[in-house]
Image 1 (cartoon, rainbow, N blue to C red):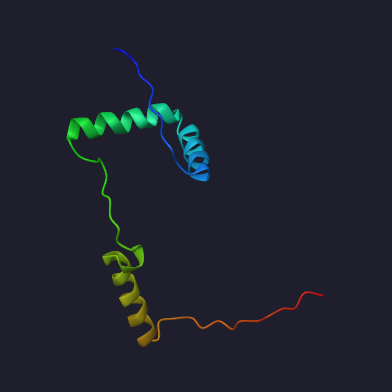
Image 2 (tube, rainbow, N blue to C red):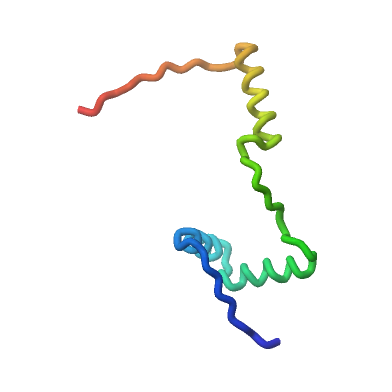
Amino acid sequence: MAQTNVNIRMDKQLKEQFDKFCSDIGMSMTTAFCVFAKKAVREQKIPFEITAEDPFYSTANIERLKKAIQDVENGKVTVHDIVEVEDE
């Protein structure tokens, strides 16, 4: 199979983070992008969900917030005092 080059522009910090991630899981960035491309072609879709939804308003977080409100209303919380300490 003939090989070709693909140039991708991305934020420098994102590239460094992705490179470290790939290294941590034992693959190169090239391998990771090839895995993504093969899966996308095979499934004829992006192989993960893409959403612009703010995670704060996600169903899971809304349910968590509702439970936290219930816990407060039912007295199932621990109150902590905040103590400010000045640097000397």
